[in-house]
Amino acid sequence: MIWLDGRLVPPEQAKVSVFDRGFLYGDGLFETVPVYAGVPFLLDQHLARLQRGAQALRFAVAPSADDWREAIAAVIAAHREPESTLRLWLSRGRGAGLASDSARDPTWVAACLPARRYEPRVYRQGVAVFASERIHALPEQAPTASKHANYLASILAFDQAHAHGADEALLCNPHGDVCEGAYSNLFFVIGGALTTPPLRDGPLAGTARACVLELAASLGLAAAERSLPVARLGEVEEAFMTNALIGLAPIRQLLHENAPALHWPAPGPVTRRLSAAYAERVRACTGLTWPLLQAPAPQPSPPRPIPATPPA
Image (cartoon, rainbow, N blue to C red):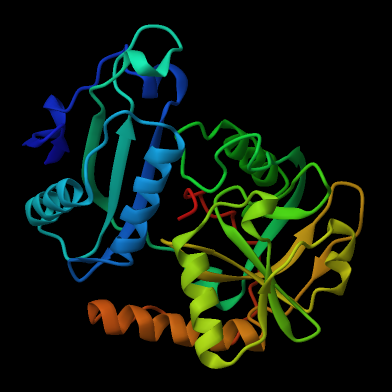
């Protein structure tokens, strides 16, 4: 069952107008939330980001957090599977032309999709990332901290990475600083300290990203949001990526078009500690055991790239 504009309907009846601004212009937002044992993980953070996004995009009207909670409870109950992927969509609705004030009746949708499961090698051996030449926008150029529906730049970057046999793309901003992946936030360890690009450099304000920074503080790990020029990637000692569905996945190598690849331990010691803490956070919130990282095992043939899932 699909929640569409305030009521549950069968999937075949869940239809949106071709004049909806989300379809026409990508004028909307979305959230992707893992559901473990019937509990949406980090739901408060996802709903808060959705509300911030609606404000940043200047929606005249948007569902409240309580409206979304009603919808979420209904679709989880109708889905009847303990694990799933909760997807929330919000568009400005139908309107004439580009003027945003012509649309005052938003389209909002909630649905439970099959749970996203990743291959064990993603956690045990790590993933490959390709350094894309595509430039990521800065916050003053686009609402980068929100999950807006216009995802074309990430799609093209991921397609390029996939064509080079990588699982993810690495994107830099116009200043030449590392920004994020096509569907993930990126973390690096340099000089034993954890660092991730600050929001002013353009990455999504990821819920898993915020959780990892909180866990690092609780573990007493040195961590900072700091700009990382792409030229300094050779100083990196280990790396991992995050999003709400994948959790933490170590990065084993960074591929370049015209330069030697960089290789990192996957998982490294900092990644291991944070993965264990993340697993405990999932268990405390949902009762489910999120997979802990294990020692990498040799693999006889190159793995296929993992499908992209938008960052969360």
